Length: 233
Image 1 (tube, rainbow, N blue to C red):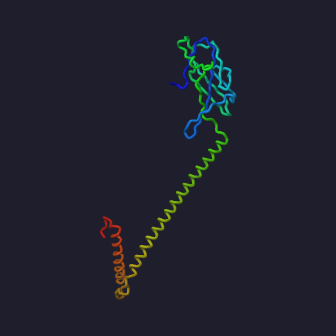
Image 2: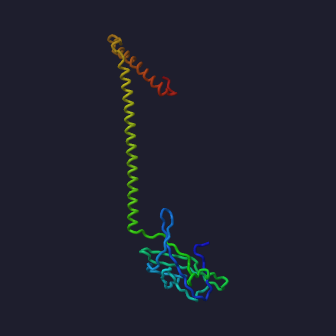
């Protein structure tokens, strides 16, 4: 069933229609409804079937008086006004139908106190007050600052990680170099026979001794980390 039922009135009757108004806002995703004070409305315009009628404003809502000469038809009602410096609009589609027979009428169901009372029209929200706007701005600024701080901390952590990784890599390389130097340092070059005046032969003997040490060291590393499957050495 629609929120705003179509109300059927027998032709030839003068009657009044009352429009209650409410405002709905949300807090933590929960709707909060409050009555709109009709006495605070300004610039009120009410049109019934496109024809403007003089609004009758009371504490109950905004009413209009309709003549007995309305033709058989279905009529929309549109109300516009200014409320607390905000433009509002309530629009009732197919609100009233003028019918020829009492058997077709149900207007008597909507007569609590004389005028036909429509379902309350909800005005959604409204312009924020200056205080509410400033509060939202402060929350936005804080959220932005928190996000920037988190980004800066993440970038600093990454930079520190990269720096430590580089240090560890340097330490590993330095340790390897020192171990090689120590291994080579154990070679007693004085025991290498100088091949007469043949410097190339002497250099070859020295190279062979160093190569033997490096091969031993490389084999130790392969035993630790595992030799590559395609390695033939």
